[in-house]
Amino acid sequence: QVQLAESGGGLVQPGGSLRLSCAASGSIFGVNAMGWYRQAPGKQRELIATVSNVGTTNYADSVKGRFTISRDNAKNTVYLQMNALKPEDTAVYYCNKRWAASYDYWGQGTQVTVSS
Image 1: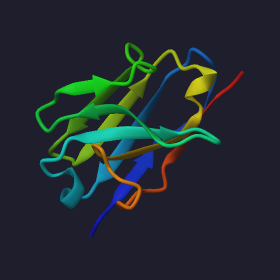
Image 2 (image 1 turned 90 degrees about the vertical axis):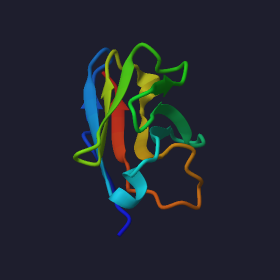
Image 3 (image 1 turned 60 degrees about the vertical axis):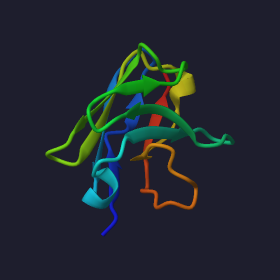
């Protein structure tokens, strides 16, 4: 059964931190590189961070230096530590395999709102 369950979002003030988690089924997690995506209101979903099955990471310029992606292969879980949050980070955050397509299965996402 395919499963992606994101959690950990919420309302945070600018400069604050959040840690997102994503529990994935083995069929997706497996040997795939995983990624975190986000979709802000009125914008397309964008890939912001990826982690390979051996821990190699890559980040979009917009989050580099502030966000850290990691994975626990024993728990089929991927994490996103978000620090120094900005209002422009407000979005629904999703996890999936790297370069997932719109027609792939997606979870519900978790809302992150950065506002004072």
